[in-house]
Amino acid sequence: MSFVNINDVSFAYPDGTVAIDNISLSIEKGEKVAIVGQNGAGKTTAVKMLNGLLKPTSGDIVIDGWNTKDYNVAKMSRKVGYVFQNPMDQIFHNNVYDEIEFGPKKIGYSENERKNLVETALELTELSASAKENPYNLPYSVRKFVTIASIIAMDTDVIIMDEPTAGQDMKGMKILNNLIKKLSEKGKTIITITHDMEFVVNNFDRVVVMANKKIIEDGDKRKIFWNEEVLKKSKIKQPYISELAKELSMGGNVLSIEEFIKEFKK
Image (cartoon, rainbow, N blue to C red; front, side, top):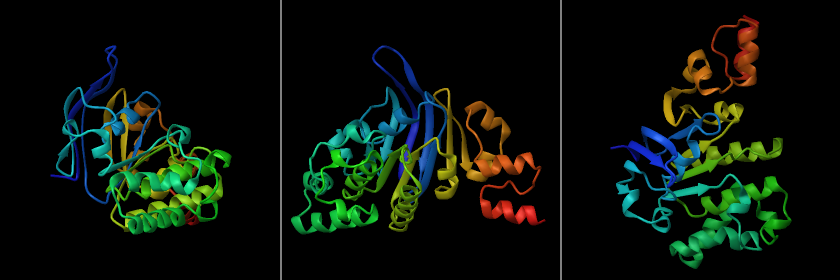
């Protein structure tokens, strides 16, 4: 059995609105997976079920042997950390350090363990200089990193990031790319929801495409972003460099500037 297992799962809201229609997905421990698709495809609903924020209407989700139906959100947060799209939905302390320490404290880590976890999270997100700042006084992009750090500090096996690139400048993107690399090296399973296809191709190899509340494709990023039928069905776009390569009728299924230059020289 894989580390994350979504087995024939559907989800409907109390009013009967179907958000997920019979999806199945398996993710191995340590994988990096990007879930893409237009708004309304079912992406956020799918990942919220991974940590118990939502429970499947039918089917089962099993994380490292734990069926999410059998555990509450607090218990599942030991396995799966979820970074909300809007940092204001997550932040409630008036001090960055306290915000990041809250999760490890609730889980029951010792004072020394908490200190090490918080300092590591601060370092990865480059927030050390802002540890005593009020998060509400920080720019939106930095607040996003406060919420990411608060999840990193919980040391969960699975980390989910919902639209982490929103509002980020070039510096923020570099920090984000680096922390994903470092977390992956530690064996963390990283799942992201994003509309930023450049971010996907730079950080993730496996891409899951959703449309109309279903998974319509799952595979290598090169296979996904050069599949015209999948792009059309999901209404997602190629990365900009791929679009340019396509306009110039280049071969090689280009996904990066380096690949573009190589094909251009040919």
